[in-house]
Image 1 (tube, one colour):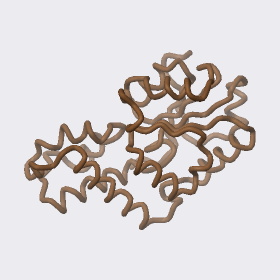
Image 2 (cartoon, one colour):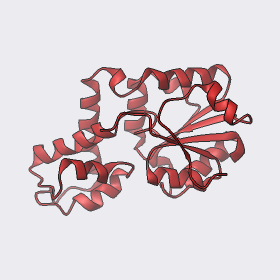
Image 3 (cartoon, one colour):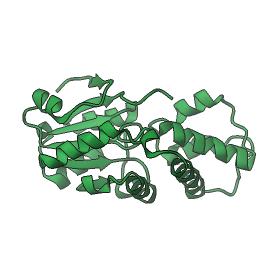
Image 4 (cartoon, one colour):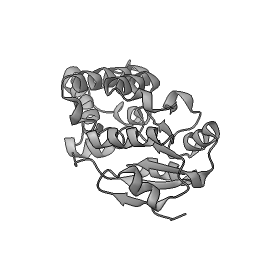
Length: 220
């Protein structure tokens, strides 16, 4: 297995993937920034919290975006709870619930193709038609994950969904991806994982499966 994943700047077709991986039997996707072009909307949801509650971030929006990308919300909470104006009574759950409420509100107000490109749906359709296993492995909470999959009408493609709530250890630990391998019954050489962040790539590489870096969404 390569020490660094191949970078994909365009969403591939299944035939292109199978040409490079003839033993391919399963595709595992990260969600935010990979399956969905949603990272920038997570940042907008967070910034709305700051506006609504008078939180004063010590960084520019660009730096805040970099802080959020690929990082689980409970880890973001540990950083931002020290910022000026952050509600001292809030728990991590309070913070996550508020951010997810804002995120879903934003995504419901925009056209679906803004966060779910048709070529991603096309790849999912091809994989299902050829009976590949399709799994989702995300650091987001189960409630918001299921809501996002439902909004995009793509829940039907996934035979397995692993969220933060299902894991005792989170990315960059490879536990979530190793669990997905165990539950699907596939060997690592039969699986291709798509990830976009350093944290996610570290987790994917640690599973022993093939990994590609999804750099196919427009930059925020």
